[in-house]
Image 1 (cartoon, rainbow, N blue to C red):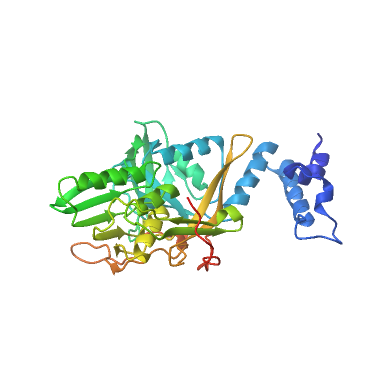
Image 2: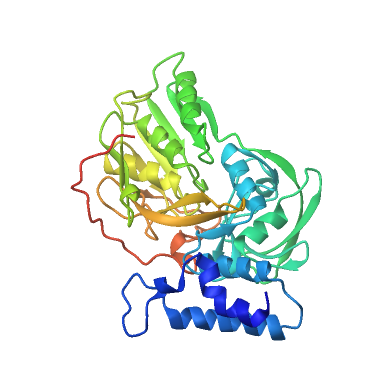
Amino acid sequence: MRLPRLIRLLPFLLIGLSPAVFGTSEQQTDDDLPVADIQTFAEVFERIKRAYVDEVDDSTLLRNAMRGMLGELDPHSTYLSSKDFKALRESTEGEFGGIGIEVGLQDGQLTVIAPIDDTPAAQAGLQPRDAILRIDGEITDRLSLEEAVTLMRGDPGSEIDITILREGENSPRTVTLTREIIRNESVKSEMLEPGYGYLRISQFQNGTGQQVRDALQNLSKNAPLEGLILDMRNNPGGVLDSAIEVADAFLDSGLVVYTEGRLPDSDMRFSATPTTAAPDVPMVVLINGGSASAAEIVAGALQDQRRAVIMGTTSFGKGSVQQVMPLGNGDGVKLTTALYFTPDGRSIQAQGIAPDVEVVRGRLEVAEGNDFGIRESDLSGRWPTPMVARRREQPAASR
């Protein structure tokens, strides 16, 4: 097909529709696509094909357009290549090759949200809000989030150089890390003293809910628990179902979280069940600016139901729901489709969970400010705040 004809047909080829769907300029409904904008897109496509310094194939241009279309919506919507799609599944299953770090974009700059426990990134001392300037010498300014993640992953035993700039420091530093298979055990527990347990959740994976129940049973096997510390600091989130299961382990009734979106199936409500692993144990929950998403759901539910005292600093504030949708070509789309709300109707989005007792991060010689971590509100393209609950009067749906 010759280029001029391709350009003329491009609007219809892109979406598989006939020209009649577009309507006319005289009579255009809300469902009609904007003809002028589609024509401008086709013109830009043609200019690139004709004049760009290097020849670029049509498939690359169209995929780049789709990436840009999703990437400009918010920091969490993205186009996933088949390789990225596979990597996303691996990360939720709890095993992948890399350095063990959760990253995001702050004003277009690749930035550490939280290192994962017991990984090369944590052992090297990387901290929330560290700006990542280079990955193996490649400047990160023009990399997408997925491209940066792909660069950081690799074969176990291979080395990677990460150049970071830490807040409060004048010059960057380069850290050499050795990639490992990241088998992230998301739950750890120990007895601090008789009757008082410590439970650490570093990330929410597919089996986290059951791991929490097993850990609670192990902690209380010799004697009933008299108190529990639930540590979710620097927990970047993960699987929604696991967050609900964890909250359910401490609640015997009431709402855990609900979501609202444009599509009917995006409006969901999740409630606790009577089967509870630790219904009456006094609890303190630790959070900070690296606690995000699923961790905020648990903290918000326990706070609203007066089940636990929340201690630390305000959490990250990622209150949006992403659905991963496979495409026919083997790629996928991760798309923001709804927002989370706590049982009392508070939006988590860009607000975070404020602790009942604020404990700022400090050093022996001087206390630091509490705003040490990157939060959702810092990300470019984030949703505005706050979102107001609209349909809380709807009856609870089963899960």
